[in-house]
Amino acid sequence: MTSVLQIPDFEPAVEIIPLGGLGEIGLNMLLFKVGEEILVIDAGLMFPEDYMLGIDIVIPDFSFLLRHKDQVRAVILTHGHEDHIGALPFLLRELSAPVYGSRFTLELVREKLKEHQLLGQTDLRLIAPKETLELGSFKIEFIRVAHSIPDGLGLAIHTPLGTFIHSGDFKIDQTGGVSDLNTLAAYGARGVLALLSDSTNVEREGYTIPEKRIGDSLDQIMRKCEGRVMVAVFASNIYRIQQVVDSAVRYGRQVAFNGKSMITNCRIARELGYLHLPPGREITLGEMAQIPDSQVAVITTGSQAEPMSSLTRIARDDHRQIKIKKGDTVVLSSRFIPGNERAITGMIDNLYRFGAEVIYERVSEIHVSGHAHQEELKLMLHLTKPRYFLPIHGEYRHLVKHAQLAHEIGLPWENLLLAENGQVIRFDREGCRFTDPVEVGRVFVDGKGVGDVGDLILRDRRHLSEEGLVVVLTVLNNQTGDLLSGPEIISRGFISEEEYPELIQEAKNRVLEILTQRPVEDRKNWPEIQKEIRKSLQRFFVKSIDRRPVVLPLLIPM
Image 1 (cartoon, rainbow, N blue to C red):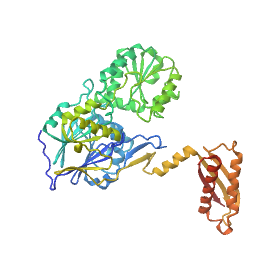
Image 2 (cartoon, rainbow, N blue to C red):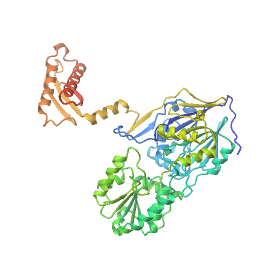
Image 3 (tube, rainbow, N blue to C red):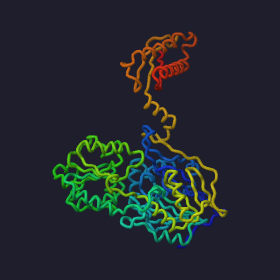
Image 4 (cartoon, one colour):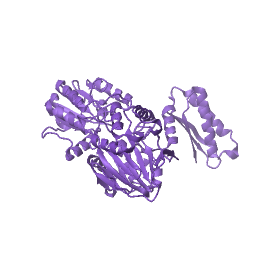
């Protein structure tokens, strides 16, 4: 393959700038910069961690990119998972650039842009494996890679300085979607300046389990179970959904889909020809009651016990159409994502309480990851033979272990690039080095607010959730500052007022003392009075009961 590029009028240099996805799971977003041209690879989100109370999603801080938005040539999407496309609507509100993606990826993006009322103003452009795209100083070839979603892509990014391979999220599985190893090997033979490779599963030895083994496990479940079978799976994992459909049909079951994202994604997959269900085999949830339980299979969302997901509501007996009963079998065909373990095990317990049998990864071979294990990661390195190696997509220990793996197969330490978000990796004629970092961070999305909730508000939310709230309500004369009514003390999440009447009364006394003993000329200094009440009660509650509630004095002048 001959790479034809614009010849820049400057000394060739390439900068790689990660805005998210290094040192964390999710938020995947990476910039390639050549001169005054920027290529954006993915724009993903992260779901909130436990301490992010009330937050809906987390997106990368785009500040650096927005300061250079006129230089953005395109946004390239490797695949359609939320951690790679979820922040795209928020980015496209701020800048205009064509968005390139594969068929399934763009259909998922269209649904997302409709929700944000951005579809009509976004330039979406379809690309496919083996196609090439020329964008100024960049030329990109798209490489098919297997993952847990259709149409995953790796990238060969040609620049005036050399070729970079971006693996995307991938695994090497010859029984499911097949990665294009020949193209990767051809690039390795020609010379790859640097490989950027997915590190998510670097701690797992060997190879990923073949997808065919999961199909065999599903067959056993569908054949043996006498009641309904409900399979919870990620709505984007169309290959797994097809396996469930095939097993259900093979053993005489009708198939119902449950969950908004499941219904949407399966509709898109069927329209594109990625999901096949024989005519007459699909039923609605309302039709299930008319069919023997032994002939029913439900494919649902909620494998991670998300609070409002379908399976979570079923486990709470809060689903309008599906009620668990004895004889049902529930299959969680996904791994326990770190941070979700407690919620998932609680959901499993509830399903058992209602009489269901639950099958999950820890007790049965019912899930295989979409990310490469160690031997596949080694194979990617062997095939591409990069001069430099940059581990991406993973927590920091994953990046370290991936670099160690690369060193084990022969790459020198000085060519292994351990980077974190915001660090700028510069390649030029002299080699590779780190330069001054750029501004990065996390932006919290809460309802319709983007970025208006920061660390200070989250700290207050945690404080409220852990220690509770005390409201001190007093009415004062607007002219003289004299007390007219109160003080009234209202406690929420702190103590029971019935159980601690003496504590409440003493708190009132302290407020009264502050209000009545204050000099007349200072009684209208409302901010200072509020500050004094707050500090006095905080000291009192710590000394009396060793608790630190949020104290909110409200002075109402009349």
